[in-house]
Length: 209
Ligand SMILES: [Zn+2]
Image 1 (cartoon, rainbow, N blue to C red):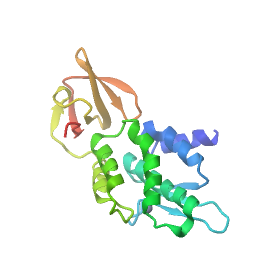
Image 2 (spheres, rainbow, N blue to C red):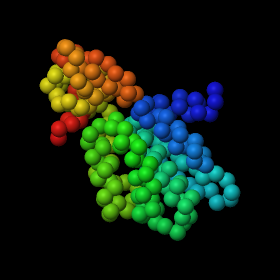
Image 3 (cartoon, rainbow, N blue to C red):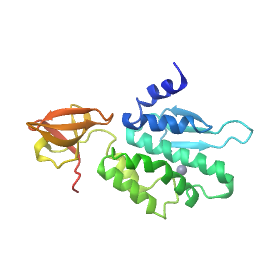
C-alpha cells in the first residue's frame, strides 16, 4: 500500500470522507510528521516546531468528531505554514496564522459540504479579530454539536427545509431535490441516496435558520 492510500484509509476513520483527499494532499505536501493520538483533555491538537533539524510534528486527538478533526488538523497545519514562513517572529494566532488558516479553509468552505451552521461559524472565525487563543468559542460551540447525535424532535424528511442536515440510522445526510416520492440526499462521503419523503429523521442543522 503506498503512502497516499495508507493516509486515505486512516483519515477516512477520523474526518468527513468527502474531505479526505484534500486532507491527504495538504498533509503529504507539508514537511511534517502527522500523528493521531489518544484524546487529551487540555487540547485538541498541537504543533511542535523541531529545531534540531528534525521534522516538525503535528498531533491531533483521535477522539474528535469528524468536523472537529478536520478543523483541528487545518488549524495545526496553519501553525506549521506560519512557522515555516515567519519562525517565532509572529504571535501564534496573529494575522499571519489567520491568513494561513483562511487559505486552508477556503477550499473546504467552497465545496459546500459542511453543515450550514458550521460554515457560518467558520466564516465568522475569520473576522473574529479577538481570537487570541487556540479556541474560538463560537466555533467550538458549532463543532461540539456534532460530538454525538443529540436527541432532537423527529420529523419526516418532507417537513424539513431543503439542504438541511439530518440523521437517519446514525448517518448524516443533506437533503436535496424531490424525485417522485423520494428526496435525493447526500451523505458525508458525497454519495447520493434516495430517501423516502416520509422517512422519520432527526434534524441536525436547519439550513434556513
Ligand atoms: Zn493554535
